[in-house]
Amino acid sequence: MKIDVHNVSKIFPRFDGGENIVLDNISFSANSGDFVIILGESGGGKTTLLNLLAGLDIPTSGEILVDDIEVKGIHPSRSMLFQQPVLIPWLTVKQNVAYGCRLRRDLDNLEYRVYQFIEMMGLSGFENAKPASLSLGMAQRVCLARALVGRAEMLLLDEPFASLDTFTQSHIQEELVNIWLSEKFTAVFVTHDVNEAVLLGNKIILLGGYPGSVCGMYDIDEPYPRSVNTPLFKEYRAEILVNLKQAHVGNRKFFESNNSFDRGGVDHE
Amino acid sequence: MADKNSISDSGKGNVLNKEQRVSFRSFFRYRASDIRFEIVGILLLLILWLVAGWLFMLLPQSVSGQFGDFLPLPTLKALYKLVQESRFWNSVAASMTRVFVGISIAAIIGIPLGLITGFYPTLRNLSYAPTQFLRMVSPLAWMPVALIVFTDFESAIYFIIVMATVWPIILNTASGVANVNSMWLKMAINQGSTHVQLFSTIIIPASLPGILASVRLALGVGWIVLVPAEFLGVASGLGYLINDARDTMAYDHLMAIVISIGILGFTLDKIVQTVQSAFTRSWIE
Image 1 (cartoon, rainbow over the protein chains, first blue to last red):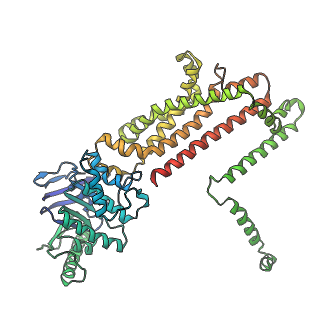
Image 2 (image 1 turned 45 degrees about the horizontal axis):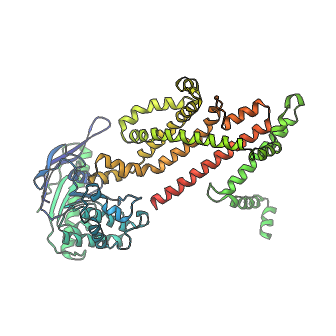
Image 3 (image 1 turned 120 degrees about the vertical axis):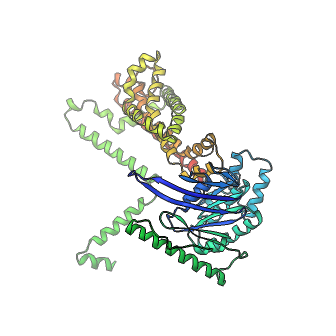
């Protein structure tokens, strides 16, 4: 699914009557089948941007187009994966995977599709297990299976692997890339981990400063699977870190002087 | 041993006391619902009963009067006789029926109200004051109203039990709904859930443990108001038996009925508690 984000700002009202500008004039676009990474520090508006893409919230100004249609609400073709795996505890793995399809009465061949994705996620044998008996990594894979069974064309992933240990993390990252390569969905992946960003994405949107705005964009055309040890990887990583730091300095200036802040003249590509 | 002695000799005897305390505590160190706590608790209550009765017996005969009948021994004798009477069991059946029917009516009214008020903040805010107000009115205060509205005593008793139990059911169901994990809702909405589906697939199943807890609470309240409600002109039930025993001055009998009311209530609560915890466990594991 093609994504076009035009001059999107999001302002939340504050309790004291003021305004909390979370996103300021965000613009970017991505092609169908891209693996888009939204990279930035915590509290930088990443999740807000993802919510806007999902249609769980609407922008204060600007517009978001998906396949040239404005996003005005949620749609099952854009499926979210949260930081913590969200499974319904009283349903089995099988029922959790089928949950979304049953809601939407998307029932043809459902049983077969469910088993197909359970197998793809390496969860065979756990069809009838309850979520409480799964590890975090397995639970997150069940969520992934639920999204894919529902024929999601776009996956919105909100730091889905942040709570996993390093081993599970690198394993499931690899799996996600493999599934993405074979299923050809569009992925929008939010993270604060620069390594993860460069390992997974073919397009990185750097979100920084206060209020959050785009302070860098990278197209990474390296083949998968990637390794952290290649020179190109290190180069991207270093560049991103410099950019993030500059955005952060700008951010501090903003707080100190409260003038319109200088983003440090960061411009890329 | 030599070590301990030397410590206590050197004036730090509390080390020994501490060890004794630890071994005493080890008897109780299991979970709070351990049966041993319950047995010891009941034994303590029995002792308190004996001591209280004995203290009353020290008073001059004119004051103490028939207090002898309230002591454990005559009471237990009367209880033994009581459980062999069919009149007693008929009354137990009548009382149980009233409680179950009353709570069923309260659940049919209260659970949907609790679900709705728990989910919609506007309704929750609107209903808060009226619910708290009505909850604070003793159900027995409705007795005259009940007798005017309902022509027969049986319906009046149901009315009083419903008035007593519907509030805890509404409030606990609502708090169960309010505590539903908001991520489940977000996920369901993202998966395309309609409003009705949100209730049927997430909110109601997620609130079931809370609903069961509310029914358990209602059972306790219902059982408590049942006895005074049965002082109304009905001719069966445990409340009626108490009234009857008072009128015939059969105080050992009266005490035996009090004890059996306690035992029955305790047992009922235990049954619901067991069902509740077994269900809650099976719900998530």
